[in-house]
Length: 172
Image (cartoon, rainbow, N blue to C red):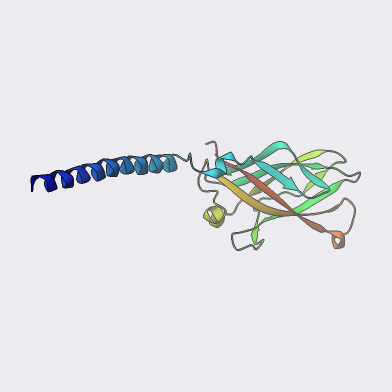
């Protein structure tokens, strides 16, 4: 009978050792996930894209979180006509462009020039756009309405754009 107890004790020690090793591995994976090492979004580069005749000017775009969330983009006009951006709308999570920028100022962009456009996000849309947490990378789909300077309102066009960037904390 003594032999049976030794075999059982060896099996139990074997399973306990491997159980502790398995627990350590689970704790390490949990710690890596908690600190964001396993988050693939941190490896995707930031970008801003707009359809022609506009383009985002370099890395000049900002997503800000805070009391007044806002989106700031430096837009370049790439055609030989002055363009008037009259409106900017943001798409919500359901896919509808129903978030209109508050405090948006119509902007005229000169030929081959750049202008900064700013969209203040309405207070009810913070969590819908995920702009409520600084440091998080989010994707914002927007569209701008524009026309050539001097053209009637009947010739207003709309084109899409997208920003994928880190949300910055607004300075106090």
